[in-house]
Length: 379
Image (cartoon, rainbow, N blue to C red; front, side, top):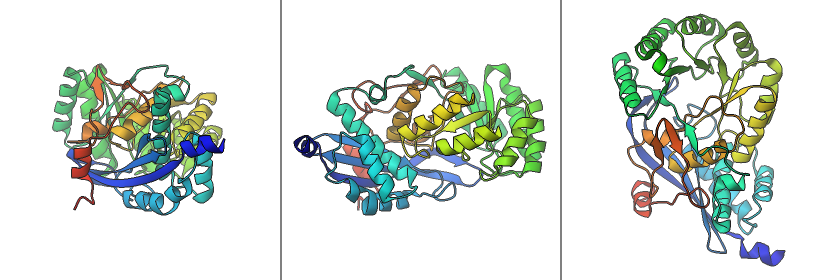
């Protein structure tokens, strides 16, 4: 056993900050993104196999507890030293070791778990979804976020993407303006698109309960299909009251990270839909445990994003592809928001869906020239 472990021991781990330009400013309730920073992880093993992973956040620290710079520091200082010399083929043992070394830090851990799974898939010659038991779908419906803030521009963009058969579900980021201004903006877009497309909104925790009650009533009357995280994640009772009050589905995002959150939200009846993200769950296996709780409670599931680049997006896609139920599709459009990426072949989007790549592990390879160009420490 020791010989086997040493043959597949983890020899080095590198965490690289990569700054990529976006195709346009991306407005959220808490920030406006002008670029996206990825943390690309390269994990090399004694048998010559390399696995890659990604950790990405939204808007630095304005969204959550981890930033790209903090993720790199955590990996370099605490997590990587704990994994060096460990058996790369035993992913569960490696992640259990990291759980003892550091609490939380889910994004950093997710990137390392992805890299371990990618390496093992390459080692065995099978896809990451095959390692997880097999995909039940090879394409994933993908929505697009209309985030310019300009109603006419958003309608034009939606019409173009419908015509191109790239997206037929559109999400609006709201919460920066008054409730009535936001509702007027969203309602105009829904009227223009009619029954040709789903329209959902993401409030990103920006409303208090009273504003949420007013806003959701108007959005429901306008025919909006889904309301995402209207109130702060800590206010679970408020979310439960809103979910009980309205017919339009209420989705928990920031409020649900792991299976423990899922259990409590299910107990309270606080959401009709759970947004799943591998980063906030600490990895694909954590996401699958969270999904299982939602499934058992009769709560619909949705594949969320942290606006990752191609590596993180495809990692999530492999996980979501294995879920028995995925009623609300996904929002794995992160690579489409980027002007460029650091992979040799970018993901394929067509017929309103993301197509899983073929090949072992993630089915992706880094483009060394682009990685060298966009890495923050290139000087």
